[in-house]
Image (cartoon, rainbow, N blue to C red; front, side, top):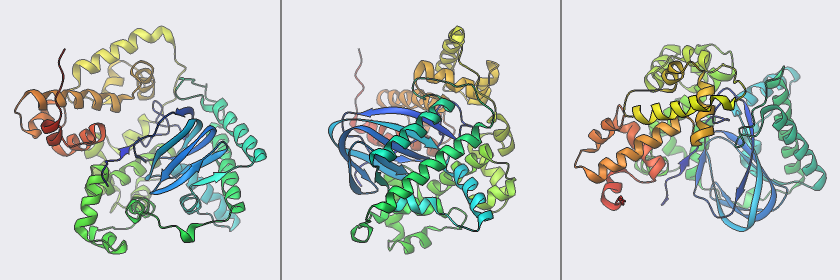
Length: 413
């Protein structure tokens, strides 16, 4: 693998972390870099033609194609034959999966969403089915608004129940369309390395070791370790921790599961282990996180634009300090969701992305203009440790801090 994957956020919405689903429309006019997705999504193509690579395999895109992506899969558009447009529905996989499983448990049936989509990542809808998909996605938009346009909808009664039904309808259409198509999976060799990420995520409750996973995929421990680091910027164990953290955050936000059950589902020894790990990583306890991320998003008021500018100015002046979204939201007497929505409106980034953007760009300047050790650059840029700094640097610059210092020169005015 020559290229580090871009890791996408695990939230369905950039400004409202408690959303279980979001709607948007995007266009692709040229090939893209590889993206590793932390959250599930459907990409329904309405225009254009091209070729997309999913987990190392190439698939043709035509109008009415639908891509199904589950957490920790890798995609990149390798060819654009004509400009493409698609509807993007991002949904909380864990939340939807748990709700569907509870339904099927009572009926005595079983369902494996993960397997159904991962084994068939693309379907081609006929005209009638495509019209149904368009209708469903429009209903989703009427509930949640359009993400990139900051089209915020006032929350209606039983909104989550409504969205669960709509996502379920999409899943049913997707699976049925796939059943109509003859599968060529027996003749396809899937990149086993990329499959590692999918395997880890779907078996988080198990106690993985580098040795056990390497053996399962017929690799040496050193090869697996190097691949994880090169592909994601994380070591094997750090990647596993990141997956567990992401799943724990989703379950805290979108379920009433007790900490003991969340710990079991995400592979922690017990609720105490989960709490210590969570607090160390995010600076807040699981219960505090659950409480703060159940806030309701208010409609955006453009008269508050001045406050949004003040927030951006404050973060820009304070990014080297130990700040987080909860502290900033409290300082300006708004919710975390409202804070992120204002930032998206002004700088097209949520708090975490904007903070890392400022810190990493400042770090680039220090790497290029000083002889500071990398750890000193990390601390001066606002990071508490070199590991977090390294992961964010690789994510944004697709190279290590040391390589950047050697190979990139910052041009001054």
